[in-house]
Length: 279
Picture 1: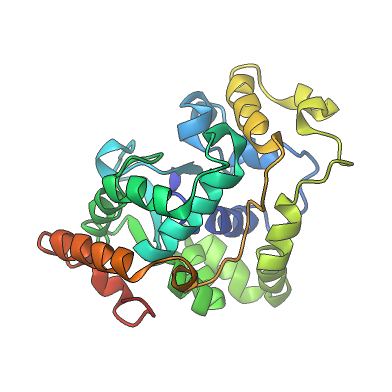
Picture 2 (picture 1 turned 45 degrees about the horizontal axis):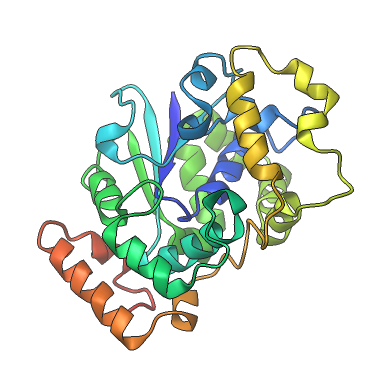
């Protein structure tokens, strides 16, 4: 089994599409539900989605290490993002999706919730540190959003090599396939993919819904309902490093630094971003 794990808004959707395109040789899906069936988000779609996933498949989750279904035979890709940019990105995600009922919420309000771990999937630091402790395990590939952004090509090769030699060899031997994957997972393409188009036939009304197995239809419809609710902003937003500068006050920066210092007493996880443009 192959898992992709992260704290929310750390680059998991981007990485999911990279892994999906590697698995599918960058072929265009003929079924709009293929990603949901072949690479389900287990937290939302349930364990049945893993049981009935067509092959090849992978599974996505936002759970900390101690809550994830773990096997030494399985492979886990974990993606982490610095806490400043994660907080900002998670704020817009929560504000723009009506299901969270936070449309009128401010960044200051969200910052307080984030610092207390009172957001979806709980405490950022607990999640990242739990996986950071396993970064050297042979069945864990630990990446950061920042390195994926800086050197996408090399990171895709790393991911393919980790997935297995057959995937790595395909990319090395087929430059056109590699370039297709780069194109289909670019920020421009991802924005287009997730852009809400009222003219597009809703997935909930798609005739292809009949191709989804009855055992997993409930989880698929739950995900579809979340994505079909018109957002007040873009699901894929800036995809950049350093946007925290436009949001954090000096006091908030100090409070984040204090929290990081507190957590650094039990882990040196912040060395991941020793060269990053953060306080």
